[in-house]
Amino acid sequence: MNIGQLEHVVEAIRFSSFALAAKARHTSPQALSKAVSDLERELGVKLFERTGRSVEATPFAREFEKKARHVLLEFEQLRRFPATFFAESSENRSFCLAISDSSFRGLILTEQDFTPLRDESGFNVDLYRASSDSCLSAIRQDIADAAILPGPVDEVGLLCFPVHRSHASVIVDKRWPLGMGGTVSLAEIGDRPIACPRDIRFVRPYIESQFQARGLVPRFQFVEPTLNGFLSFLGNGGVVFIRKGGSIPKDVAGICEIDLRDGDSFAIPFFLVCKAGCPPEMIELIIAFFREKLG
Image (cartoon, rainbow, N blue to C red; front, side, top):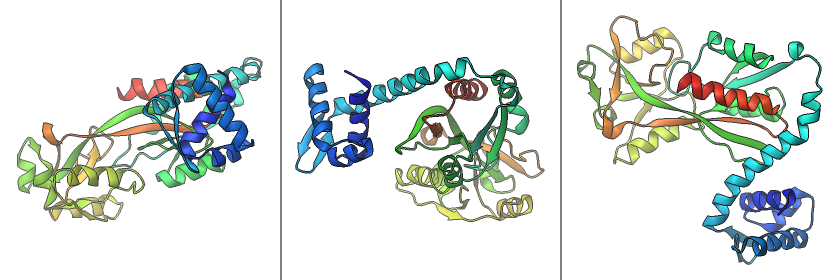
């Protein structure tokens, strides 16, 4: 088993094609197919079902790929270790972290929350807050070094690591019936206008799927991204999904945060996404920071 074989398997699973995987790996389909076959013989397990021009990964192969990705990251970190070890003082090094954190409403973390990360890493950490699509574009264009996104990304050249799950609650106006109880169900919310999540790429489909799984259709409505627009929407009976405990003006008179009932409770997963060349020490620090800070 070697690194090249692992990279072949990862790309073949991504494309479901030896030909396309070979193109991405800058080799021939025959060479890639042989390398995969050699690995299958070594493991004693079939990784792919060959069906004409396409290939389909076996259940074993999909689990094998997850471990292979971690091995490839460790190898990249090892390859970069000499440059990292002998690097000059980190005082002037900068790192841009893009955050798509307005998934419901409100911020996951404030600027001040990142002070410990800056102090521990030795990097000047700059924050770039934007939509998920903008965060991904920033990584592709080398504007940002990494991003925290409310959903996984499977893209050639990008690494993706789970860092946190944000539980959902809702904000309502206290004058409406929903504001008078301790918890609320999705069925009770379903007949009211729901503020469309700002994150269209990941979060809206995720919230929508929670309703659909219960035979419900959410009534999403776009809300002006201002405090007045927010309060006016709530005053007319609207419901706003937020990250439970997130930074949002819940202390404004007349509104309250309500938990979802146990049977309807859900959480949206957040991931760290970066290029393979991202400083490995920062990857580890960011993952540890989010898991410790957000629990």
